[in-house]
Length: 134
Image 1 (cartoon, one colour):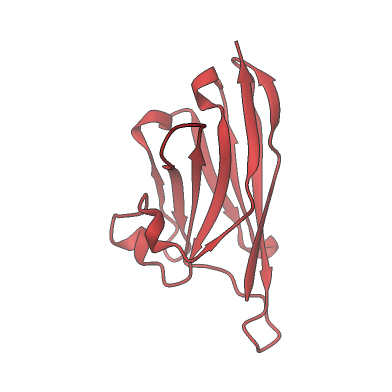
Image 2 (cartoon, rainbow, N blue to C red):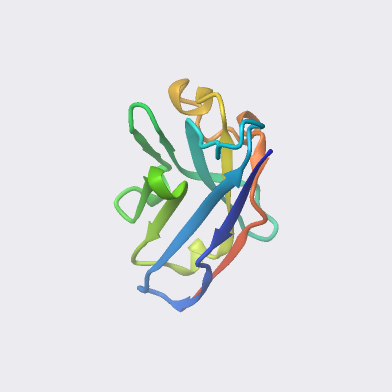
């Protein structure tokens, strides 16, 4: 059972930066930590639908972004640490939301091009709050 734990959220002023982390841990039963083929970041603001922000595949390493964050957010992963990061720069009040990381162990979400479809991910973290003030 793989578990995802997000961290790095907080409150910042507009124009500031934050780096979110998502650490994957758990066992496939063999005693080895299982890491994923496709991991995504999603966000949900109060009263709004959940939105796919970015995703990253492992083999090959490819990144995917929502148009609303291209050039502003960067997703990356450290396979040795089983961790995925979301670097968020030039934050705006409209970036305020709960941010979640999610796992698709089969990689289909990334390779199909449907990375922003949350239904393709079967494991979710508990979320980390990002609040951007003007």
